[in-house]
Length: 313
Length: 264
Image (tube, rainbow over all chains, first blue to last red; front, side):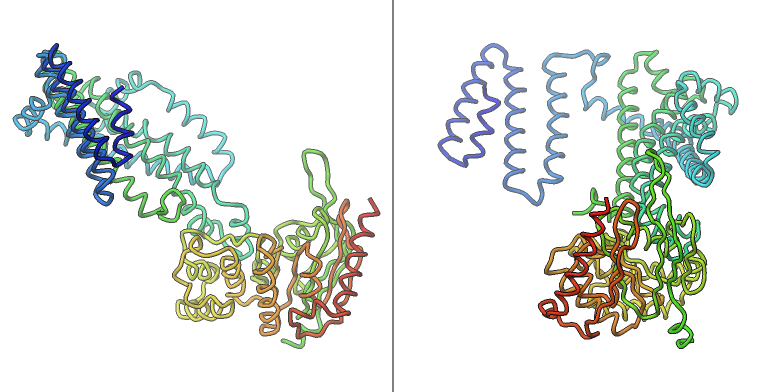
């Protein structure tokens, strides 16, 4: 009931409606507060934050683009904090954001060491090697129909292997340190990038290729000046998918053997001793790293494929 | 050099056949096509879809390969002529690369052909002026109208100064008003450059207005049913289309097209 009221009210821009709306909401909250003051507080805060965001989206057009998600994020964190405090949720089930924040600050050196081990040494080199290998393989496949029939099925076969089966084998082969994690990441990111580039290389229009032929362009010239630029939107799709796979691969691979640091190692050992705040802190770091990596790729994509209809503004 | 070109045919087809192998069996796209085009001629190919007019132009450009008969371009095989960059080709759609500016698109064939930087710059400026797009070089294709994009694609085909210009329904997707203006511009361009032009169209007025010779074709199998020499003067204002001569030629083209249809 109160869900539809503010929507309609805010759209009409009518002071009377506003007053009526605030009155209704206040009465409703008072009624809830009579039974449960905590719930009334949480609901009240939620509605206030919601109205603020509606107002920002309506009247601060220029800032709304980045202000709304920030307010939304802060709202979620505060609601989480309030729920945990009001209902005294045990930290093992769900620690409060403030507790997670405190853990991040307290354990910053350990988290940094884990991050460096898993993301900087495991995920990133694996991602770059996997992407590079996929690129070269895509060119080879493009040149030779024989390889297209041979390599693509092998690629899809490797991609279908479950990581829980693959990771222990690669740990045996490449040792406990980051090299085996990079290897897992290479295997995980290779195929999605490969099929995207292969599809991208077919994406140029026939007429555009005919034009190249009328100018007497060589294979290499056609590749560099037409087919690779046309493939870029596909390549970036592949890279975005692979960026999340790379983090998952590097973290999960540590479950099957690692030195005594690394994000996957941290999660599995802290779960074992009920150090859930540390698990959540590591998850927060992983989420942040994933978002930054994805955002970075999206930024480069915008710069490289500015011409694509999905990027034009 | 020029005298030799004027004497020798630029495009010569003798007993040309072209069969496409399709899922439904072979399709005869061209049957026994004989045609000679001299230097500096403006030849239009007209006929209903499936008559082989585009196929013939693509065969001249070595984008399709004849099944039998002979076809020479500047006395060479079409493929040799293609590798020597004997012609510029304008397709039905502009086909500009969206990641390159208009000037960048015109620069593209020149880069591929290995022109020097200074030469490229001066040629780009010259052909942009030629198609009246001076000042638009820095725009991207998607920032221009369809007519401007097609003019840019003509500039691109002119940039490397091939003797032959092949145009495959270049204005088919444009509205009548834009088409009229571009037709005038093509004629001016032809007068200024003296190129040999092969022009595919399905518009009778367009064919009559532009051409020194009109090749009427008909489908199933694709073949030439009539070749009409136009007696219109080289100087052609748009209102020449109301003249008696123009209407007579248009009439003959229409008769030729109708005759082709009765053969079915």
